[in-house]
Length: 100
Image (tube, rainbow, N blue to C red; front, top):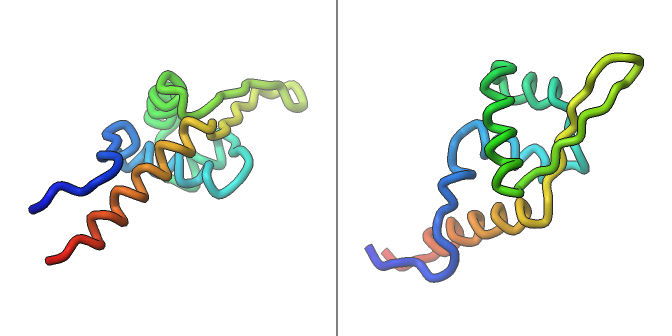
């Protein structure tokens, strides 16, 4: 198979959980931890691990606040995260457009 031009697959985003997180964040401004957990059907522990990986890579920003004396965690995609997601989409598009 010929090699596609453009960005290659970003292995960090390609896990099901991380792809779900980034996709959800692309659709809105920010999302709260429990919303992500419920929407993606992930355990608290798994979601926490995946959020840390994305945050470490600079793909998302995490903000922890107290709302009515309860801790809340909000996640927001960064420009670097958007660029990575658009790069993945562009790569997929290039693969689909290759002659058979």
